[in-house]
Image (cartoon, rainbow, N blue to C red):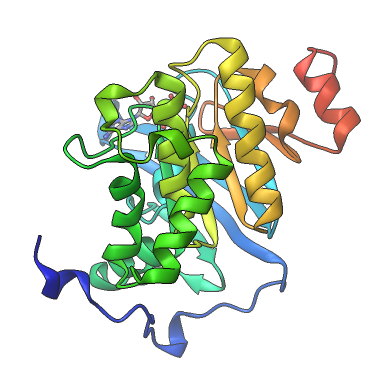
Length: 263
Ligand code: ADP
Ligand code: MG
């Protein structure tokens, strides 16, 4: 791997003009976001006038039927997709106004992802897969290596440090992906259907662990899932339909009722 590329300065230098005035506790502010695909009779509103906030230490479940715009919203928050309209600020930075090069760096430093088809590097061990995120940020030193081992231990993978991804079960791979999404201490962690390939019992375990880590490390976390049962561990539940927010539930009782189908 190209070491020049990997030893970049981790400090973001972004002009003052890109900062927003936001409530101190809000990591994410999404304001009137719309994403349109296609044109004419092929126009699809993948997201339409979506507005919400996520605070530090808040774990949010984003649910809704297939095609309701969940992945679109996650990709916009990950600075991978530009909205057609609206504002998105993360840590007070206007990610829509950034230049692509700034977005690349912002993403690498401040955002952690987990995807369903967790894209672990097949020829790197568990430990190396997680270390990679520190390496990319020029932060792989002795302390970093120790943190990798501690986090993998916390995720029940201390026996698996030197295994390759294809030697792991689905649940173990998903936990490695979670470790990788958290190790570089991002402000925001995003997961798209992280438990879709797991059986129910394992899905609960992985989601609970994910929720615990987000709370302990005071991150803002968003988990997309079509399985409402996994939302028993979230602090806020956002329900999407046809690209719009249909309902938001906050507090244990409201979330519990939503999960059980009583409104
Ligand atoms: P979800 O993750 O909730 O299943 P998506 O965000 O993937 O929903 O999709 C929302 C809508 O946008 C769907 O109607 C989908 O077909 C459409 N869509 C998503 N990506 C594209 C794309 N690249 N081009 C055209 N339409 C898209
Ligand atoms: Mg999706």
